[in-house]
Image 1 (tube, rainbow, N blue to C red):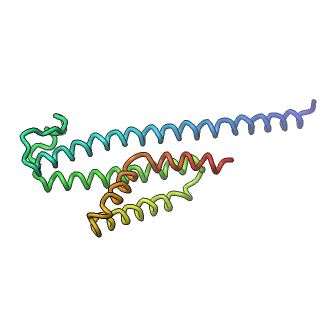
Image 2: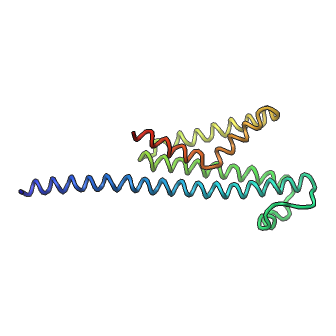
Length: 170
């Protein structure tokens, strides 16, 4: 065996190891993004449920407030307008968070930033569409708007990018 053959073999072995390591790193990062998105989805559920309980308590002058005690302490002194404002701000914050996580997942799965702008445009366009539906015809389109807004606040887009990346790889 000469030195050239050994060097060639070592180079091929290094490439093979590198090819194994990069997919593992991407898989681990993908799991990280999915886990973080799931945790944010759970936090969103807690916040939204308790804000809705607070809104119900304030708007219907109920004797009991079913919001969590920690949340009630945090929301002490809110009026109905404050609760509704908090609901919209929380929804916006969770949508932005999921948009960033979706772009991060796309970066991890596809290896570059080419999908960052389309992801942000997608979120903005769907958010605008939901807003138009929400205020245009409340009786008919409000349920559609709410469904769109909920989908953008949960890990659905992050999971969708992950699933689509498997379709692309084959």
